[in-house]
Length: 268
Image 1 (tube, rainbow, N blue to C red):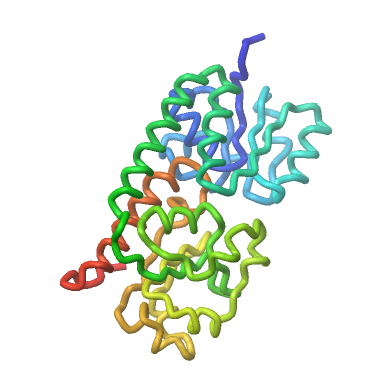
Image 2 (cartoon, rainbow, N blue to C red):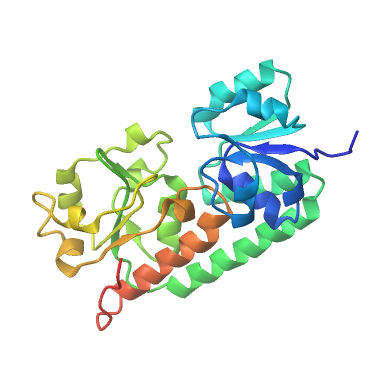
């Protein structure tokens, strides 16, 4: 038997991407059907969606470790444990917890030092963005995680908005883990009058014209100025390396554009 797991099934994308960044992609034998990063991981057998899994397909892969995410996969994890598999479920909801997840995944596969170096590099990049926005005007930002009902951003997203130089308009909701606890009314958004709207609808494309045409939103600052943007969910709603890199960079680019009046809103 190997000293560390050598056949790993990842039920969500962020652990898959982490393992590839650690140079351990060859250990990944099964992935989520939603996996996009890295592209080569899409060639691995797809064994799960977010809320369900193909247990027979997982068993056929003979994994010695299965990695999952959050309470929403608790039933899947429990069934896999009953079937005799080693299962680790992460529940990271903040930037700090994402970095911790990276370090723990590294430890699980015997790459602790490499994982620590990766996490430290990501921290340096995050700190560089934070320093670049220090002292600058902070536009009010509504991050729209879903459109019907309206759901405000989860904690790591709201933290990234702040790091990128924005001011979330619903900071009191960020710690709510479930989407249903972050539902807001259209009227509440209007009252808080965001200067920027960033939307990411998991599983479907954002329609900025639909956002702009909502009843009563014509006087919202972001709508008047045309500052309505999309960030693909793969870059911001996966609590892993993608959010800390591509997601953060896109947020920073959007807010930089908003602070520069001479620059018209880019195609979104």
